[in-house]
Amino acid sequence: MSLFDEYLINEESVKSILLNLTVYDFCEKVQNKHANFNHEWLYVFGKEIDLIKRFEEKSEMVPL
Image (cartoon, rainbow, N blue to C red):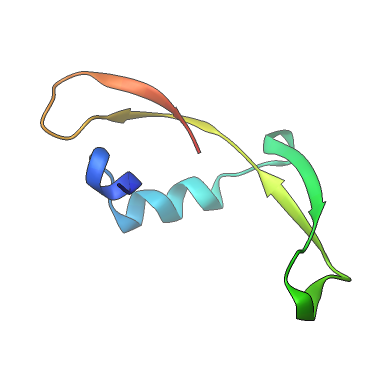
């Protein structure tokens, strides 16, 4: 299942979430495991967002 299947979220909401990430949402950096890019580092950001579950009225905090 994907985020779009489980929650009421659209591409515009995803764009807004990504554009509103800040330095405070930084979690960790990890080395890229892709063979052609293993010299690069990937910076991981995370955020908890309140989303409404599809086919339900309640919302819940979802770690993204």
